[in-house]
Image (cartoon, rainbow over all chains, first blue to last red):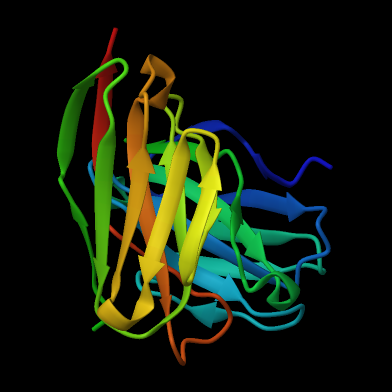
Length: 113
Length: 111
């Protein structure tokens, strides 16, 4: 099992450019999450998807959109990147059958200049 | 709102020393997890521990839900234990596993 995978690992964007971060899990989990981590801070929830076909805002959703493509995949889109979105982005998944214990991907380091 | 406080914020140890990290949370707990973020940024699951005590090698954790805190014990620390330790908490009544993270404890273990 690969667990949770994310692509790309690194990305540099110019202000105003758009991009999509991809996430996939092979653990048959129902719920998936996107977090961002800024220097010296814990993770903050951007969006989550309780199950296929549903998405909801988390703590810091402004400037982002998400798509739950199917049970395995959950993407995060930046439509018009801003320097304030420079961060490390983590995807995670969990399932009620395991008490919602979350498992994290390796992260994407994004720099917006 | 829901709050998670970790202490100490920084900890420096010599190899072989023991340490205790603390996590206080503001509400009744459904889920509490401890993570280690290694120097490469990877988040590693250490414990899923909404209550009780668990042990895994040199690490153990205890959550006292009624008093709203959790402790992570590291014994005989090694340089590979260095990194940031996060606790993350899901409050009772919070749906779909949404976790709130603490600010982390930065652990440095010197040889």
